[in-house]
Length: 201
Image 1: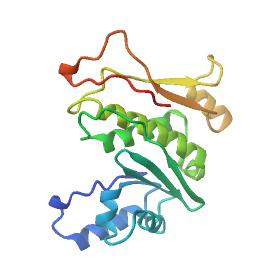
Image 2 (image 1 turned 60 degrees about the horizontal axis):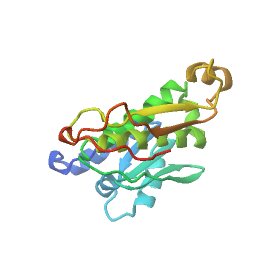
Image 3 (image 1 turned 180 degrees about the vertical axis):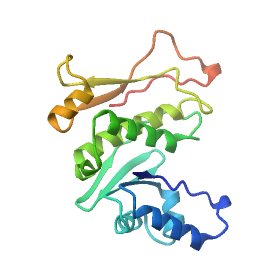
Image 4 (image 1 turned 180 degrees about the horizontal axis):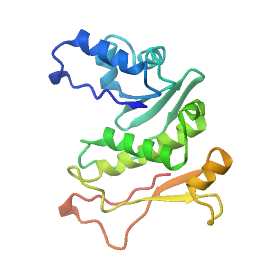
């Protein structure tokens, strides 16, 4: 299970009760995705790294920390790892967190990953990279609409005859996928809030 507390101070009337609710959910959580702003509410006065490490003690096997255009940090009991975020002409950042989670979980499911695989730092890195790519795409358009000027493409290193799901089933984990922006047949339309493609791997 992945938990994104998506803390909204205006909607929280009882902070202590909210903390207890999140802590109870973390006991059942495999991956926690939090922003630096979330951590400020969940662990006031604590720096982001220490707050993220503290969440690990409450149950999750991994904690993913996002902070806008700065690198995403992956925290596990075994250590930490940062994932770079590409430069994007931001049109509207609303929904970037949801897009990140969607990209992460899509990669995880398509590649046949299971609960036990959360201990695989490489798998976490690949899924996080996919989440970053989808989040960047979401920021390139206004409102809750797909990014029409860019698209997400897979470039598997496995043979063309084998699908990601089949490879995952046969080898435990799909070897390596790279994600990049790909220009469509037409140019992006600025009037629709579409941004030009940017390199991202």
